[in-house]
Image (cartoon, rainbow, N blue to C red; front, side, top):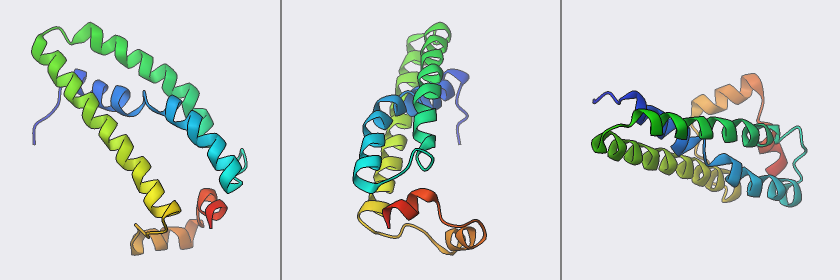
Length: 127
């Protein structure tokens, strides 16, 4: 396994993952309320992350711009950001597949977790 540089980690995690939610969640929140009847409390995660991730994503762009000095570092940063973005989309796809299409993407560990902590409020709102 290759260790990634600080620039790649920031690009992948902060730009690839955290720069997307403000736009994504701006579309998701109204649908969760209107189509699934979710309350503000049930979907607070999304609202909080619109603000927080706007700030985090902006800082990440500044850091990558400052520290990715060579063409190779910039190339690796772009690749890491793309990989992070793909992971975000797989996460969104997983939510759709599990909660909307009804495929159970869980195993016994998830069932044990829910037995101890209860189902997520989002799960209750959908089913």
